[in-house]
Image 1 (tube, rainbow, N blue to C red):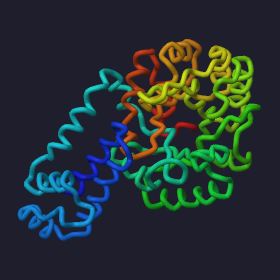
Image 2: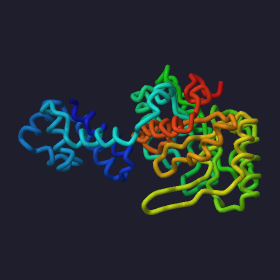
Image 3: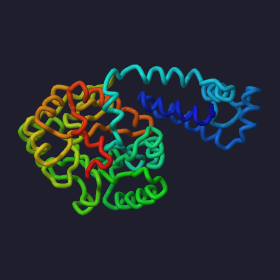
Image 4: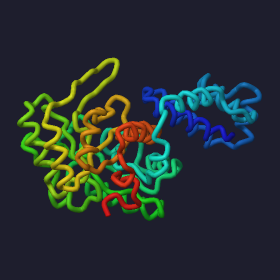
Length: 329
């Protein structure tokens, strides 16, 4: 096994498991060091046990390199792969039908990797496309994109699409739903984008009647493609944020009537909407986008979790927009 590839795979699975960024970066930096060295030097250092003398190579990364040079799959990698395959018990057929991911972040906002890195891993996963949906300007804590920065990003995406074809990066944004239901970006720019994920990120405890009105106005906007993580809930060991309250039937009917997909958010701390609301959206005839909301390359593999939840609730594949070659066509 190529040692640099082994190190990057470990970074991928660490991200998939939601491990801290510093740990992921340690393996990525080690891979970059290996890339700069002749293969003969890597092999010689592994044999002599001098890999840790190199800047950026520690005990753990040196062990991975030594295993790979010896032709063994590193134990560290084997363990991560085994752990990654345990949680998902269904949805494989639906996962195989997916052609892309409609909700992906890069280091232009609060993601940890470049657009290119996200795209290259999406290609490795067999995707035909991915939608780049960095945050809008109001979410300053996430380094949201001003109109000027978004225009610059569109130019970058156009260049990358020339390099990476036939893979395609769809232009997009995760736009804040403002308190009055308006979308947090210039209308001219929203009209240029392939995908607009509209999400509530503020005043999540707003009373139900006002929240319902706010969400319905947002999904009635002709630029909205997807309603993102609709309840806003978060469930982690350190943070348990309850669901926002709103008239789910009215909101989902508005999604259906306006051709807006309800997102099935696959992030482990979100898993939004809850199954009872997902079942309701299915019954009401909504379309869906099974998304990772990935902020790092390894997280692009979370689609399987969303597919498992979709299968439990009877989501038909023909109503999943990212099972299509063109999700907005």
